[in-house]
Image 1 (tube, rainbow, N blue to C red):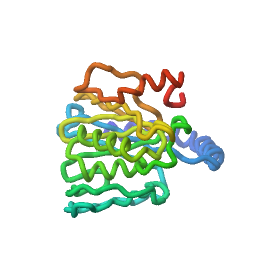
Image 2 (image 1 turned 60 degrees about the vertical axis):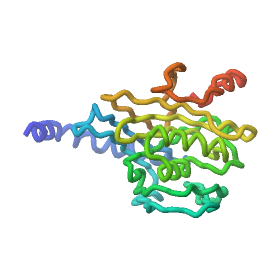
Image 3 (image 1 turned 45 degrees about the horizontal axis):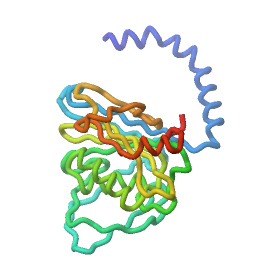
Length: 250
């Protein structure tokens, strides 16, 4: 009843603004027409902040070519020596092949059979830190990690190990990584064509909190002496000082 009352009281005002809003939206669409859209959004809800004591991640990828996509990979056993073909998630371009593990977990969409969830938003960062020769793009890191990790902490390790071994081919990203017990936000960016791998910071979101990110680096400062709640590239700080720059574009 209260919701209905509020809607009725604002109906006339909304009608009066409708024409102006439509005009502004049209102008915005015209101005944005020549630019690549980066409008992904993640919202992370920890157990203590949810009604049913569940960790949750919402993932909105504002992209017409991803509409209706729900990827499925059955659990599988692989023969020793099997190789996994890695294709760029955005373009489908073949980036290379890596050794397959002996067993992979079942995944549906961005969650696996152990209720591990990984989402992302892209924030770009400095173009000179991209590696065109690398094999692992951000999408491949997500979906391969879902097939190889049971927990959020395991997923972070898988992501870092894969990128450091085979190179990171994408821009700066923020990952939402959650399992049944913990939720993390992870910012990552490449080291450049002459330094294989990535720089990253992953921070555990305190239970009872909600976190969100939308195409902007989420972590600005972080503790360097709290490994239980913060994991990061130890060489990242010295690299930034050497380059006398931020790793992201403000």
